Every structure is written in structure tokens, then in C-alpha cells.
Amino acid sequence: MFDSLTEKFNGIFRSLSGRGRITEANISDALREVRKALLEADVNYQVTKQFCKDVKEAAIGAEVIKSLHPGQVFVKIVNDELTKLMGPVDTRIYFVSPGPTIILLAGLQGCGKTTTAAKLGKYLISKGKNPLLVANDLQRPAAIEQLKILGEQLNISVYTEDSKDAVKVAQNSLKFAKSNNKDVIILDTAGRLHIDEQMMNEVANVAKATKPHQIFLVCDAMTGQDAVNSAKEFNERLELDGVILTKLDGDARGGAALSVKAVTGKPIKFIGVGEKLDKLEEFHPDRMSSRILGMGDVVTLVEKAQEQFDEEQAEKMQAKMAKGKFDFDDFLKQMNAVKKMGGMKSMLKLMPGMGKLGDLDVDEKEIRRMEGMVHSMTQAERSDPDLINSSRRRRIAAGAGVQPNDISGLVKQFKRSRDMLKALSGGKLGGLKSLLSGGLNMETLAGAMNQGRKVKQRSKRKQKIRRRGKIKRR
Image 1: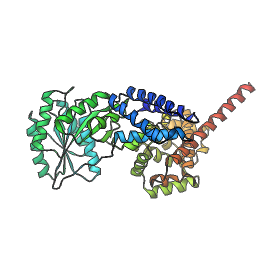
Image 2: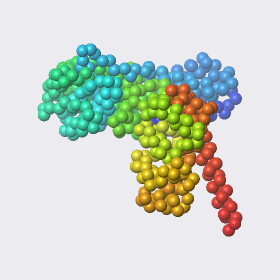
Image 3: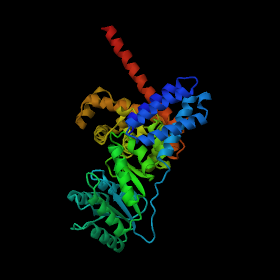
Image 4: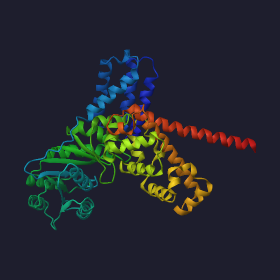
């Protein structure tokens, strides 16, 4: 997400940081590059023009030119202006009493509307609601079946009818919801490959008949300016309450996220960051701005961690780390927790300056493979990996159906993770407990990760020295 834009912004900031003082001409040069980067990211031209104007006014007004650290001040100004551009924060869903609250999802075909309906249902369950999904997309036969399957996976009721009358189906779903104590209705309406009068009339008629309390437009972020243009047209016909951007985990240039609020005046409510049904996040402009500028998103990382651990678990883990008792069983627990938090790659992207360490990613298949190897070890070997010599490696590999060098790789990965977690659990860094209570800041996390990287680098240097020694002996 935004990888190309992030890289370009960082290049601009580096060029400014290398100067002792910045002149107005330097700022103009930097903004020329900012403008180019935004346009290449498919940000709306008028939005780009206004953004650069606002940044320049703020930069000159803040006397960046006289600052001792002009590069840092300029980064803060760009961060603030990006946050304003995408803000304010508005992730609220207004629930009515008595219910049910009606939420209508509109959007073009292929934008991920049906999957988003299911994701939103899962999100509402986490908020204590009892939602009903309504298969109101009668134009695409697979949409009804898809929603039924997703509903079964999430244990959410799905209302369907063998009908071609979208208004009638929507009205009947309201009666069903009331008689079955459903407090939120999510209407998955029909879309087309492009905006046309027939589609607009159908969605408008469904809205008129059901009087939804909120209308969210679902947009595919990967379509860039097309997403913004469709949002503008839908808003003119439906009076949107907000936008949900999907596929922000793909190769998106990011232009839609930066443009849609400015063009429509409607807030981005949620973003889809993956295909799995738990990959719907509340949209926070300040966090997104930090991600775009390569400064990470520690708040989201903390929230994800808090969902998987409680403070008591964190205290136990920190105590084990302090005593040097972190073993393979603990390692597997951590790997499974990381998987539930979206994977190592996803976590690294939320850490300041760590987004490029994609080589540390561990997928679900790899975790199952690790489990097989660990379960082939004796309890003594799990507790003390130093016991694993060549003969033990061969025995464990045979039991797990892998090669002995795979066991060696697992042991190295375990030790690397143990060293990183040890750095994280140290007194200076505040520990895992501090992370879960929200007390760990960007610098702290970066320090822990850097410590892990230093350990890895030292290991590589030792290997090189050993190889050189072998070559000389030959």
C-alpha cells in the first residue's frame, strides 16, 4: 500500500535534510517533486494543486527556512496537511433505537461490495450487534450464493428471495429483520461495470423504499481516479454518508484514498486491507498519513496486539524472557499470534522504517511446517535448542518429513526471534507488557527491531569470517 509514494516522499525529505538551511527556492523544488509524486499516485489534479499550495503556505508560515532542522519540520507539515486532506476521523455508525438500523452499500460491479458486506457484518458482531445480510444484488447470480457462503462462514443470517424485484426483496428483508430481532440490516445492492441510468434508478428506488439510515459507497482503490469519479456521481444521486475503500493491500497507487474525501466531501469510514473477512479497518487519517510517509502506524499495531494477548500473558512472557527461558513452544505461540495479527510482513509495515523487511514474512503454510518440525523434537530439545546436533537434526527431519538443513534453518530463525524479543522485553524498551498497554512508542519499537537486525548482521559477519578462514586453509 502506497509503497511507491512512500519511497518518493522519503527521497524528497532526504534531499531537504541534507541541507543546513532551506530557502524558499528549495521548498519550491521540493514541492515540485511532491506534486509529481502525487500525480503519479493518481491523486486528483485539483486536490494535488491545493495540497501543494497549503503545504507551501504552512512551510513559509512556520519559518522552516530559519529552522535548525528544516527537513524534520517540513515532514511534520506534510504529515499534518495529509491528515487534514483525508480527515477528519469519522468511523461512527449511527444506530437507531428501536432498530433495525439500515445500512445500504452501493458501488460498481467488481469493487468488492459483497465481501465488504460480510466484513462489515463481522465488524458489527464485534461491536455487540446482531446483523442481517441482505442479498439485494439480483443482477449478478453469483452474488446471492457468494453472500450465503460468507454468511455461513461468519454465522450471520442472510436474507434471500427468488425474485428479480430488488425493491420488494429489500422491503421484505425489513419485516424479516424485525420478526427475528436483527438490529442492523446490511443491503448488498446491484452494481454494473460502469455507471448507467438503470443501475442508478434501481439503487435510488431501493433507498427510497427502505429509507436507509446510512449509505456507504464501496470503491475499489486500485481504480484510482475512476473510483473518485464514481464516488462523485453516486453522491449526487444518493447523498452518501461515507466511503469504504477496498483493495488497499494491492498494488494501489493510493490516489483514491487521498482524493475521495476532498472531491466528495464525504468521510472514508473503513478500508479493506486483505481478502480475509477480518481485514476491514476503521479509517484514521493520521495513521494513514504516517504510513504514507514511512513513519509506521504503532497505534494500529498496539490495537492488533491487544486483540491477541492480555496483560497477564504479556507479564508471563516478559518474565520468561528475562530468565532466558523462551523455548520452541513459546516460539510457536508467538508465530500463531503473529499470523492472527496479519502476518509478520503486515506487522513490519506498521513499524517505523521496517516496511521493507518483507523477507521476514511467515505464511500459514510455513507455520504448519514449523509446527511439524517442533513436534518431532523431544521436550528437552524444545527447551534447549543447543542440544540439537547433526544426529538429532537428522532424526527430527525424518520425523517431520523435511531435510536436516530445514531444521538448521528453523533453529537459526528461533534464535533470531528470541534475540529480538529479548531486546523488546528489556527494561529500557518497556517490554511486551508496555506494547499491549500502548506505552511503547515508535522509537522504542524501532530500537527493538534494529537490535534484532544487528544480531542478524553480526551472525552474517561471523559466517563470512568462517568462510574466509576455510578458503585460506585450503
